Amino acid sequence: MLRRKPHTLSKSEESLLAQVGNLSQAPTTIFGMLNNADMKFPKVKNEKGEEVELTHGRYIQFLESRDRGVREAAFKAVYDTYGKWRNTLAATLNANVTKNLFYAHARHYPSALEMSLFGDNIPVSVYDNLISTIHEHLPLMHRYMALRKKLLKVDELHMYDLFAPLVDEFDMDIGYEEAKKTVYDSLKPLGEDYRKVLQEGFDKGWIDVYENEGKRSGAYSWGAYGTHPYVLLNHKDNLNSMFTLAHEMGHALHSYYSDESNEYRDAQYTIFLAEVASTLNEALLMDYLLDKSKDPKEKMYLLTYYADQFRTTVFRQTMFAEFEKIVHAKAESGESLTPEELSAIYYDLNVKYYGADMVVDKDIEMEWARIPHFYTSFYVYKYATGFSAATSFAKQILSEGQPAVDRYLGFLKSGGNDYSINILKKSRRRHVDAGPDRASA
Ligand SMILES: [Zn+2]
Image (spheres, helix red, strand yellow):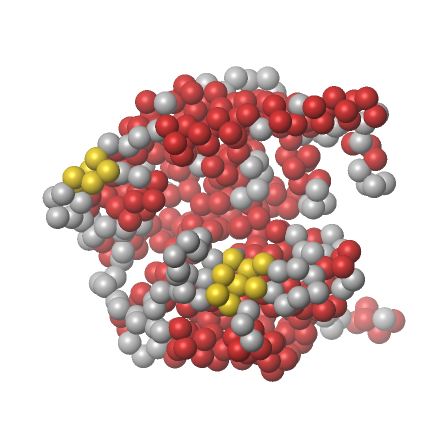
């Protein structure tokens, strides 16, 4: 309350702000209605030459097609459609930015970015460091694009080749029983206590495993303080589902440990921390599978899976984060965000992030118009920081063993008993200096 005091207004001002609450939802609602209900995409030809209606759900399937013509047709059709609505979509995005500026100004924050990070008490330097660190490492992304071009054997790599599979169909038929066993084995580095709880989750009905009539899609972990966590899956017998199992059990055990170690008030961890616990399990599973595999084809399949996680979770989400930062800064300095301006910013970012081996098709300049997360401002950077922290933890656990495991379990047990950054700081490796100054310590 004390921390929020400078941003809490008088009773009558707060009352007025509360009354514009519904109104402030309008940009998101209008975008959602247009994007999910009213916009229709044309038909495109699939691999068999059949005309199929393009939908949001089918778009990614088309982009994963081995038939380049199918990928290109779907790509062009999607951005052509968004292009036709460019003025409306720029207006809804503008309205959302204006809303952020309004609240930041009314509540005395220096910027919309600072307001958004204030809730979790994340310093703006974390956001800025993420962007500058990723900039430093863009040559790795560019190298991956060059490799992609080589493996796909194309003269030019285009934006619609980003999701094309790089290796021949590699069939990994993994039943649920085998998936559980593999996940259990792969998490050995986390120690027996962790694995005991994991086994309890497997054995004692925490998990709703298979698809069922009326059951929602996707996967998540949820629970209430005082009960064990629950996990929803829609398990298919493949690699992806095995990673999902490792991921969701990471969330579940995070909740288990944080509930067990904290009072109700402090048990809930933030989204900023949540994806660390889930992604860490995926990293350990990946390490285990790569280590175990003797088949070069299987190894390549796993490595491209891993490389794409870095591309989509770390680099792409940071590019989104940078776009949001630029757009808000421009609005804050009084510049208008025309559709042309939004597209130019977005296009330039793509050129920068994908590098010289990618032919950045003009169509991609409309992608900003189809990202729903841009209506939950300054949120996606957490995917990139979470993945980075998890990768770092995994590296420490695999190289150091027990001391790193202890720090990691300490992290899981912290729940929300401190600010997220402090919790992460407490569990990082202490660099021990063996210099002469230590004599007095
Ligand atoms: Zn997750």
